[in-house]
Image 1 (cartoon, helix red, strand yellow):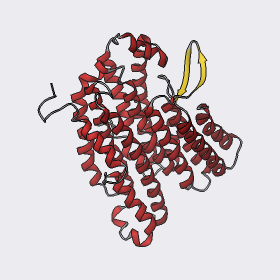
Image 2 (cartoon, one colour; image 1 turned 30 degrees about the vertical axis):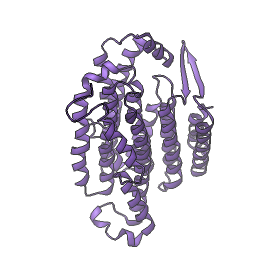
Image 3 (spheres, helix red, strand yellow; image 1 turned 90 degrees about the vertical axis):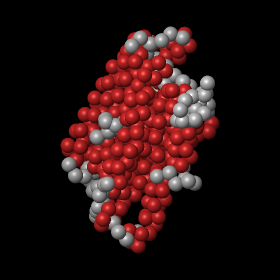
Image 4 (tube, helix red, strand yellow; image 1 turned 60 degrees about the vertical axis):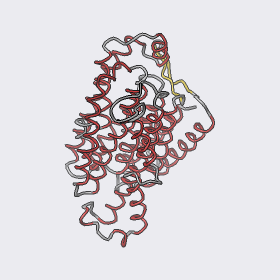
Length: 402
């Protein structure tokens, strides 16, 4: 059944692109069906799966077994529906506009639900490149090429790491589980860990591999910015958390370096964020900055060794990924609407917005407060749990409990 969550947006994109079906009604029907089917799957099944194909003994399986997959599926279907319902395509660009959202949604859903190392992630690169190049702001072509090169090179690094794992542990998830149960250790685990952190870190915009992200989100049209910043970026974090049980010895030597880099995400990119003069660049850099907090949860989980030893880390990261995905997608949606209504995104020119657009200003302010972690809103408990996950197992600031 889960396979339809991937197939429905792909079929809708094919109908729009090849059969010239009405773009908005077809995309809205697809988003509504996946939303309904996804919610039904989340509330009705536990670990349900659906086999996609088998070739040369390798199964591509979709599953809801990991709890984190359920959170990411919920995020994907909600943001997809909001993207299709709330964005307005330019005249003559309806087909490519809605197709991009549907293809990114299919790629993200497949990536979060695939039960082995095969990923649908690359399905989203082509529409991202095309949409930024065709409908982006500013120096859109340079931005599109830079983002594509960064993400493409990151995928090649990940491929090298996955091949090194697959040749030792098997190319199916069941093979990986059998390998972990055997108690054996991966050869060259430290090298594989470094490749995984670099590859996934680039997808997540970990400092210093982050320079593609903020300009890409600022330049991208609304559906790409919403789907990429809100959903697809979380795939890198999802991948790191999924590989953590297998890579305990591979990730641990890089923890200190990772802590330095995530602090740069929070502090350095934070200073860059508050210095922006345009609303789209401010939101893009803010998204990059928030990834540092979730990396803190990952580092805490690596040091603790397991989710049982540090339950704050994975739960806090899951809640923060969901909250951040929803709030940043809403902010980019409103950013596009503000530009349409006012003709500018220069912050100095947006004074008095609450007088001209009171409802939009209220919702934007609410989403902004959630994004910065105001108590009572979704991001705060996630950041609270992540922060305290970094102190799990410590009696004071100088050493672990013996």
